[in-house]
Length: 316
Image 1 (cartoon, rainbow, N blue to C red):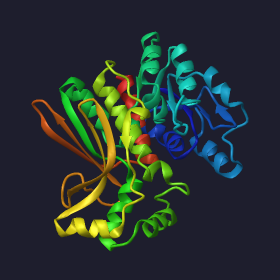
Image 2 (image 1 turned 60 degrees about the vertical axis):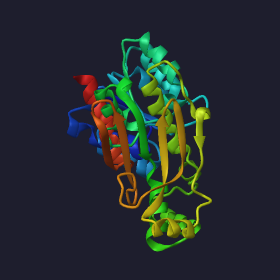
Image 3 (image 1 turned 180 degrees about the horizontal axis):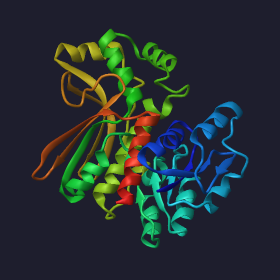
Image 4 (image 1 turned 45 degrees about the vertical axis):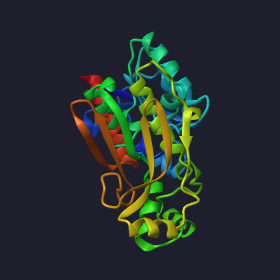
């Protein structure tokens, strides 16, 4: 497949870097200020080096990518809330041109799900977004394979930064601010970690799951989620939990048409108490019982692998 990649952050750059290993060609690549286009395929090493050295990927205008020869648009620009722009407009343009779309950007699937599906219905293109929930973990594809109508609940840990903070607080008896600073030093947390620690990122993923489970009957957005973060937790709270063989994790619950995110007591050695930056999710489904999925839920190469898996599903 010929790929047009929008977004030159960790995920977009990793898609460009790994595409050839999966048998695909990147014919267009853009950041917010520039683009590189080559119908015969871009030199991944060259465009990534240019981005690192010059701060741009090429000399063309970003809009030039839409006139490139490509089969699949990979939308990996930063997630935005509300109108989900400019990601939504990128999806709209690709579908208008009857191209397929793979999302790493959570915004269109979380904030404008019905609009995306309506555009998809009028297009010969298809939209896939497995990378938006759990990075490399096959959460949405598992729901798809089981059948959304058979899934009664999805719950677990879907943010590596928050999980790192909580697991370190529990292991070392440290307070939130100390561990957050450590996470920032290690590059696990952003300079502004609000999106992760206040539960917003987790809630967006829960909203996407809820939209998939609803299958068009009800549209969910971030406004429909009940969200609480981890900023008010103290080391002493985790110490008390450990006395009873429990710990605290930032848990998302999608059940009975509701999305809830907040700190929850869970078994210290349970399935939804991963350590470090790992994610862990439980899916409850008719006839299947409880399905557990855990592993690396974020990271450039990890999320890029989910993007490329979606590309391969489109190629089948």
